[in-house]
Length: 100
Image 1: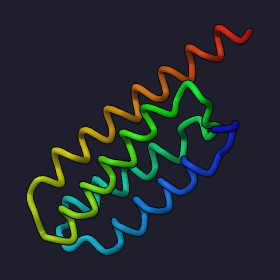
Image 2: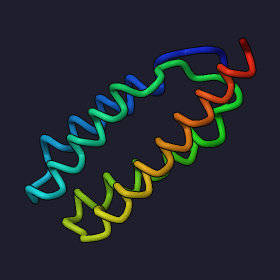
Image 3: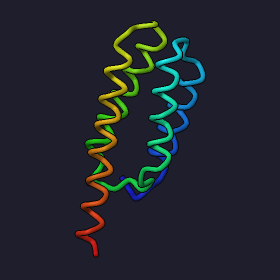
């Protein structure tokens, strides 16, 4: 994977679109908040982030399935995605401090 912003942009757009489709207000708000967190996340993907971004994609797919099915698992999955995003942000910060 080359340095790219496509992962973060796509995830933000996907979260926003799913938020707009969610039927439960709580899920809609949590997805919207997650989209905002992604928006302010470091947009550049690096090889060192590939594993965590793959996990984030998988969790998003689970969230989408849960929301589409009206399943209550969506809240826990959104929390998991937010935890992964925090870990990704920390890895980004660490890699920048090593690069300087």
